[in-house]
Length: 240
Image (cartoon, rainbow, N blue to C red):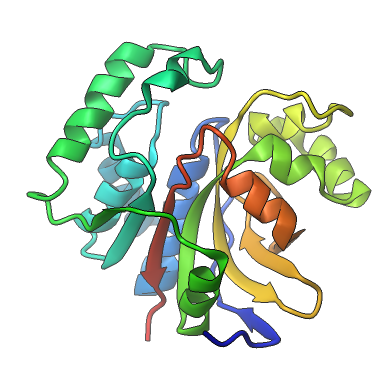
């Protein structure tokens, strides 16, 4: 595999509207980047209707995002270490609300995935593979632990999140705490590049006002492999 000094794919930045819809905002970013003609109000309204049809309410899982991409005919690959719901998550505060009904819905979606044409693989995507994917006009929707991602961000970033908290993802608020013993809080981002010389991952964060966010590769790896993420990642290609 070959790593370039700097790679950045052009992905439009979309802010999430609610505390729970970061995944839907990331999927909308990915769709606009991969298809290129979804910028008008009619397209946005149609997307909202598509999301509503998923039946996920405010509990959006990665499998829901994969189904949305499939609805739009976008070729993608969903990689995860768990095909379904990890029963141990019932003890995680982040997942406890209506866990049983949500688990039933998610497991059913996994069972129907192959017939629905989804490409789901039970495997871990290495950082090297992610780099290779980014090198060929690829982007990725990644599930991370927001408390890890943001706890190690710069003071300037933390101040910016605090300033715009009313419009941001609730998970960023938790990261203001100055201690490490924080519970898992799931959050989706769109990885769109890297800076090899600075050892950074470049990404779009729907909870942030900044067009482009940066994080060290070590923090990114810790955030995306934390307990609760299942190492979920959806990889897709940009419009050629």
